Every structure is written in C-alpha cells, then in structure tokens.
Image 1: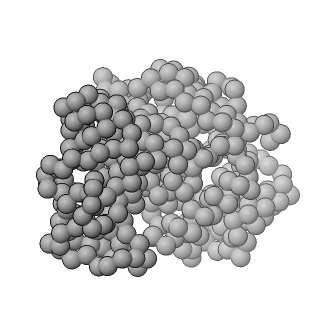
Image 2 (image 1 turned 60 degrees about the vertical axis):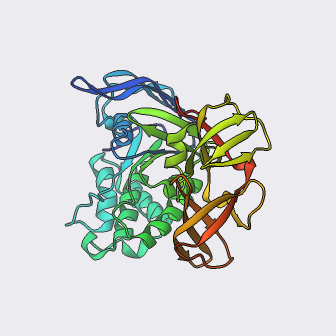
Length: 363
C-alpha cells in the first residue's frame, strides 16, 4: 500500500470520534474517543481480545468503521482507501517477497507508484542508512535473521514517507534478546523521523519503554490514557493496576476501621493519611512489589510466610502468603536469602499505597 501525502505537511494528528466497530450484533469497539498528537508515540496495550489490533486496522482502513469518524492530519479518512490515508503499516509477519533482494523489496512500492529511478535509489539508500542495513541490500530475505527481516519491513514503510506509522505487534516473532535491541531501534527511529506512531502490543515492557502515552484497553473500551509513569504510579482502576507492571501490583483485601485505620489479614494498620472509605467498608489495597520492605516485627508490620523466592542476580522476588491467604510479591535488592516456609514481617511504603473501591473497581 503506498502513502500519498504532502511531505511538507506538519506532523499528523490522529483523532477518533465516537468510533464503534460491530461484527453482527457484537460490539468489539464501543464509542471510543481518542486524540493522538502530531509526532507522538502512542502504544495500545491490553489483553488478548481487547480490540487493540482491530482499532489499529480501523485507523489503517483495513477494517470498516461501523460508526464514528477517523481523522488524520485534520482530514476525514473514515471512508478512504488505505493507500490514500498517508499511513504505512508494519505487521507481525514481515511479508517480504522471498524472490526479491532487500533492495528490490524496499523499492517495490515506489516502482508501483512510478517513482523515478533516481528517486527510488535515493530513498532506498536513505532508509538503508537509517536502519543500518546497507550491507544487506543485495541479499534475499531467506539469508537474513529475524531482526534483519523486521528492519527491512520497517524500511519498506520508511521509503513511503508516510504521515503516520502503524505497528501491529512487530516484535512478537523475535526472541527475547532481539526484542530488546529492536525496541531500541524503533525508539531511535521515532527520534530521528519524528512521525506520529501508533504501536500495538500485549507486551507491557514494550509499552512502558517506547510510549509517550499508553492507551490501556479492555473489551473494546479505554480504561486509562497516560504516560508510562502515570499509568504505573497512578492506575485508574484495579484492571490497570493488575495489568501494568511486571510483576503485577499486589492487590490485597482490607476493611476500613476508621478514617486512617485499616484491617489487613487480621492485623490493624494505621495509615498516615485518611482513606476515602467508610467504617466497615471492604476495600482493595494495591502496593507495588518494590514498595514492600522486609523488616523485623514493628508497628504496622504484617506477618507473612515465604512460598518461594526467585533469584535474578541484582534483584530477588520473594513470594509470600499473608494470614488471610492473599499472595504478595516483594522485590528485594540485596539482603538475606528467603527460604520457603520462613516467617517474615512486611512493611509497605504508605505513600505508594493505592486504595480501590470493591464495587466500581475505581481508585
């Protein structure tokens, strides 16, 4: 698909206004509103089936919109063909032509658009330089590694000079080490090109490391939009709290006793700030693994028993069970090894404690 646009045009915004997608009687995207600023790197993240790839394909024009409007650079593209939207898409599968060289793969779209030969050569060489694939131009895809093939697929998108890049889980087929290096490459690419980019992934590490803003989706609805720091440190609800972060945020049951006292697993804890809850109200408390401390017995400490510990070099994750059966994960750096069955006392950093409603899940 070729992208037709004015290269001198300013960085393109993307606006979704009341966008809905239905398959028969089933709504998979529900009246969704979102604005992506020009030059912004936005990541759609959520569990399988949340609608993130469907939403991306609607922006690309590969899925029809049931209702609502999609605007790119202020222009309504809701009913336009993909080739006329000024977008280039990079898929999970590289979709390279196996019988063509890298150079021919990069040039193919430009040739179809009848671009002059000298301009094709210039754009192909410019893309190859950006992606450090110049020495590979005369090879065929079968002679390349997975990471090299993905670079070629990205290069094929670059030569179209799109307003917007759309990435649909582009690193899923790569091994862990390659995914890390390709994340660095994509971040560098965004800095150098400055295009608006939307990136779909189920991998929250990719979302946290790449995004200017993260859009957390569930069941075709937006749960939260914010910077990686915002969604990590201030999750809007229990779903976001449990989904963003690895290991996930610890969610434990509690009962409000007074404005600043709470019962957790049979132990009364005094908080350093009032709770937005009423006495005897059952609540959920969220605490990140790095915000626990293993201490001796003291005021506000919780008894726990070690289930098992994961040693990861500089970091250790200690998985413990509280008296009420709730499981919590503690991140440790240094300290003594913890053994299964061992009793510990835990303290949480209260400023990092999040309190959630049981009824609406909201914080």
